[in-house]
Image (cartoon, rainbow, N blue to C red; front, side, top):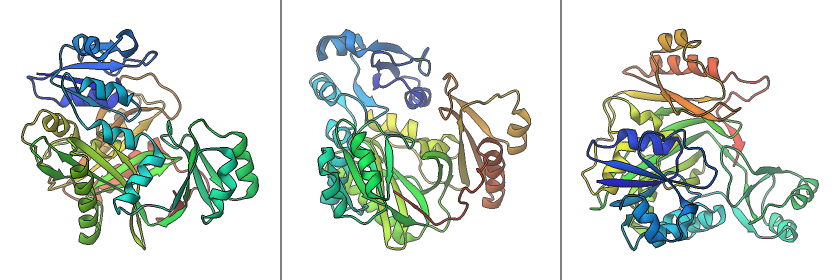
Length: 381
């Protein structure tokens, strides 16, 4: 059976590596995208070289299903491919989540907690839109923003004027900053039969807008927060008739849980699932979109992940890997500052022992800068 993945990055790579042996892959790249992550894992097809969906479907090897590894894909192409094969998750879900304004409004319309926000389509609307919100604010481009990119902190009228002068195509969303105790994500998977399974909540640490560490299960997560998150995920999955993995990034606050972003795909904060004793998010995504029974998502140990950003040498870091007993997952990408090149996974029966190992990795790979906040309570959007 053949699966086609829209995208050629590390998430596509890990989905292909986790798939059952009877599944083959094709990958759809956009013009100019590097294919290093997926070379040798299946056929690689360039979207722009095919005039219509029928030609693309044939070039992909007539897949049984098309899926995505990222939100930034042409939804029109996904809808057109539905005439020839299944497309999971639904193009509707991808269309909503690839645009911050649509996503926030969708969450609000479905009674899912989120930060207060305003959608701004033109620079001339900034002042009036900001007047209805409490500063400080974050401004984020509607599209093409990830890992802290295309975001602006708004404290003063001068900040608004500067943003107006650099106003991005497609507009921005203004969001009130919130005080939160920690960042948590929740990952669910639903198959074509409608069966849903939830992974435990994940506690995440970001620096400079980039995820550097995840730990699961999140420590001292209350049943109320867990139940709220799972009810929201179920609502989203069933509203969209969603098939595959869906990720919900949240802030845990004194006022309750607030959703920051959705991801209609496997997610960086779920990379820890690639360890023993659990079915990984990548394997479960493929099982789900093929209509097969889902694997185990319940854990009996403590799990963690640390991202590798920029330079890393396995030979030079051999002692670090030995001391922490970490498993290295490499993406086959060329090194650039802050680029995600791979990740390190650890698991342990002892939470304390796991934290010591993860902190050793964090200290070596992501040392805190002078003056960087170390406490739990932060203000961010």
